[in-house]
Length: 114
Length: 107
Image 1 (cartoon, rainbow over the protein chains, first blue to last red):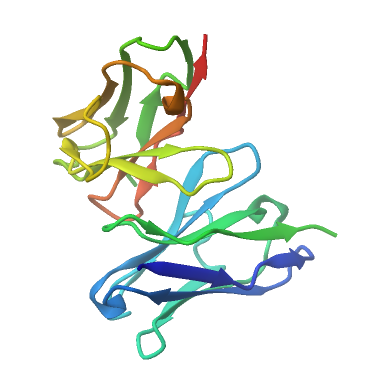
Image 2: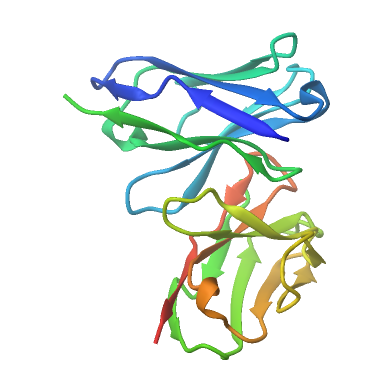
C-alpha cells in the first residue's frame, strides 16, 4: 500500500521558518520526481515545488523561489520542504505528492500569523 | 512560465447534465495535461492523464480531449457524487501550473 505521511506543519510567525517532511512507502521512492502542492484557505490548488528522483534538479513556483528549498533523502524515502521568510500568504494546507502516479499525502497545515 | 486559463470558474448543473470544462495553455504543452477532482476534506483525485487517458477506476462518464493549447474535460451525465471542484494541471514544463479550478454545484 502506498503511503505518504507528512509532518512538520504548525503555527509560525511572519518571517519565521518551518520544515515539512513527507515519509514515503509502498513504491520505489528514488525512481520518481516528487512535488509539493498547497491550497490556501478558500483558494485553488497551487503547485509549489518539484524535485527529480535523484534530487539533482529542483524547481519552484515564482511565489516561493528564493524562500523555499525542496530536498529529498532517498536512503530514508523522505521528501522535505524547508520554508524560510514565511509570509501570511503562505498559510495553506501543504500536500506532498507523486503527481506522475497521483499519490498524495494527507496534507499538513501551515499557518503564518502573529 | 505557462499559464493555464480554466473556464468556467463555477457552474450550476443538474444530475444527468452533460458538463464541459475547458483549459487553455498560454503555449503548447503537447498532451502533458491531467485533470483532478477535489472534494472538501479529501485529497485530489486524478481523473485523466496524458490529456485523454482515463485513470484506472474512474467512471467512463469522464473523458478528456485536446492537445497543444486547448483541453476539455467532459462529464457525460453528471452524478450526485460528481459535485466537486475540478482542476487541470500542465506538466510539460516547470514550473508546473494548475488551472484556477471549476466548482461544479448543484442547480
